[in-house]
Length: 252
Figure 1: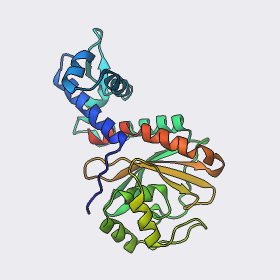
Figure 2: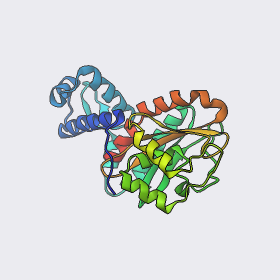
Figure 3: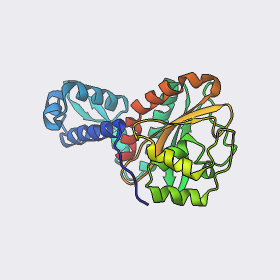
């Protein structure tokens, strides 16, 4: 399976954050922001924003003299012994915070062994998760999650997926023509959230943004009751802006 790689803003932010983290890790006694700017060649405003995010996520800490050292979250993720559990906990905390900041249920989904898989999500009584009334694995054509993952595959990868999963009509808005769906997926810019406007379930709208790390295809998504559809694009843009911490966790 070949991938279409069109780096998004969160991808670039995660890459820059990794450069900062690697530099901090090399300076075990601490490094100042001025030294970090010199080593990473990042402009001060960009570096300040990244350091704020890295501190919030627990990847770096500031010691008494103002220098930066590696934080506890980085230490835990760097440990082979409990990395999987640490990553799951870290991602869940990030999802919980995203849910509260965008005011919607949020999801991480991956394309694993040719199938759509929602790996983690965060919801609440005020931000309910989508009712999975049709298995997400067979409804990629109708969901924001599925369409976002499919956009990250090449043409043959998409055709292979659709050949294995019949495009059933789930609502009156569901696309059931593979030709129409493939043309829309081809035209979808990587930097624009993919939307599901009641295509999977009547009463629910969704949006998804790519979080591809290396050869792994993934996306970050949100869902809203249709009465909050007027907030969808704003929430999707906020989700996109805040995708970097998720990408960073997956990349470490």
